[in-house]
Image: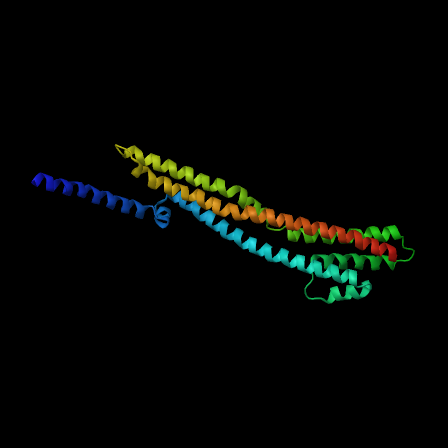
Length: 245
């Protein structure tokens, strides 16, 4: 009878040990602990990915507000341009305005050059229109450079971050398997913490890359729409000036 009574106690003891081992493994595999337990190089990779992720989010919000503002100002100016037949009055409003968009500045640059060339004695209509288009084109290029700024950074983060995270993962897995050389019998419990720590670098790389790729594709599409709108306006404005000249 004593043997029968002691048998469950013996069975319970290993179960308690197993539960404690599971609790310890769970505690050791917490996110903060995995970062702290990673090697110095993997921690540097994680820190770099965290930094570029924060920078990419900063530029994502910066470009979001800038592009929304440009769409709003361009729509307002285009409405005012077609509603107002007096270009001189519209030019004065643009020059004196505190908040102007890219289309406003393209219009101001073209109209300024048009008036300047038209005042020359014996002016040629084709020469005046060529000079006006060049002035608008130069302003257009400057405005597009401003709108496209930081998009290359988002594209770089989206394409490079997964590989940086993968490098940290490979290095961490190498260290995990190298540590098994001193273990007589390797088990999953020995390998799992090191692999989990290494995989955090890949997760952080994807966390930095995915929003950057999505934002780049969206903003590149919006900038292309604005570019098409500016080019259409320049052609229409050139036709209006040519009829007046």
